[in-house]
Length: 281
Image 1 (cartoon, rainbow, N blue to C red):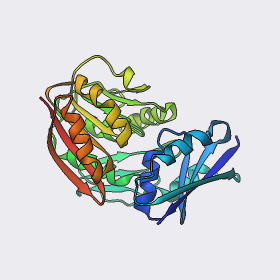
Image 2: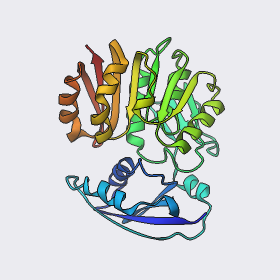
Image 3: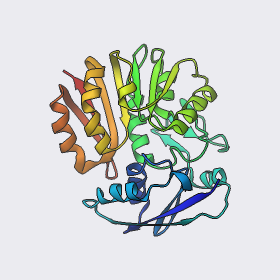
């Protein structure tokens, strides 16, 4: 298969700024991201590359505190799984939960240990928001709770919910079929394959039942668009946990959430990233 290398110039370049771009480009079927200052290099099957759509998303970043440029060229042949391994670091949250790949060795065991082996690059970036979501989940009693993970990616959050005793099925939804394949495989690797139901599609495929907890670690625009869906899907007093956006987006998200009977409870921050907790009125 032929690949295109998309070079996303970031000025000023930092890992944090690169992770913002990763989050904003999740709708594209990139199979690997590589940090190569001053570029974030993204690799995609040539037949799936849509320059106009990418330019549209880049235009939405005009208000961000950095400049973004894009260019592309045919990619040289590489083992993309090997490239992914070079760029994926384990995540240890609050000393209680470790998210690692199968090739990571000699890591200390924590209370919760999740093994993630994506086919390619799903979940390799945006570690701050994953950290924030996991940290909040560690403080929640999920035993017997009905949980929905929107934009599940590799399935990390759904897997943690299942390990913490959430009721079957924990529903995990992602629009990318490669991501949902990865989530299914990871749920089996972590011995919760019989607890998690993975569905490919957007918010329209969410089962018509009420959930106790909805998790959404996506990006600001998708969250704003789907708040009405989250509200309809939550039972009264249910919890909505949101991340995937900058701290300056908090006020905008809180204001819109309140239009859908979602009461703001608290926020936590890591760097310039935020996680918000809401309760259904």
